[in-house]
Image (tube, rainbow, N blue to C red; front, side, top):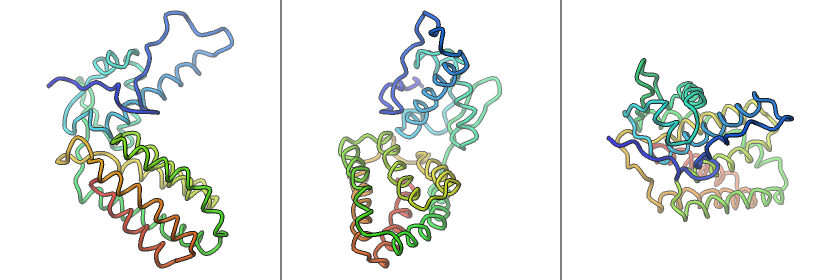
Length: 239
């Protein structure tokens, strides 16, 4: 099977330029430069996974992926090791990394755990924050609609998490935000039996729920907030 290209992963998970032939500037520590390349590779691979360019069940070697990204194999291996910790890939000794398979029940479990974390926090915020405060999140919600309209699944995944991060950050609990974002990322891996691309209509419907949630928060409608958020999280399973 021909290995997919990664150049369409979308920002910030887009293609990675090859490392320049010249060495780093004298004032840049090599470790800093290496960390930057590794971060870009990780973002590109995450985008390729979410976008369906790397197929569930398929095995990919680090050197082959490195050639497509225009980098050495070392940062690719390091990024794939992180993805293994994230549950996105599995290490296959002497071969590379197999893209993990995910089922609807598994993603439903993640959605349930997300609801246990996020719903109580958002309901507390709904009862305590001034109504005008929610307008600050409108640009993020609008951005999800814009990216959804373009049909960019990888880009939408990033924007979707950005909206939910910003929402939860209002609670002032960094550990909560970090944990919820990790769960959210895991819930975005594609299904083994699902389509390689998510229909634009599904992305637009999901994005529209962000605006509806903000409307309910601004109106102080606690019941609607809870219903919308629970439905939004449940609907993310298998999307």
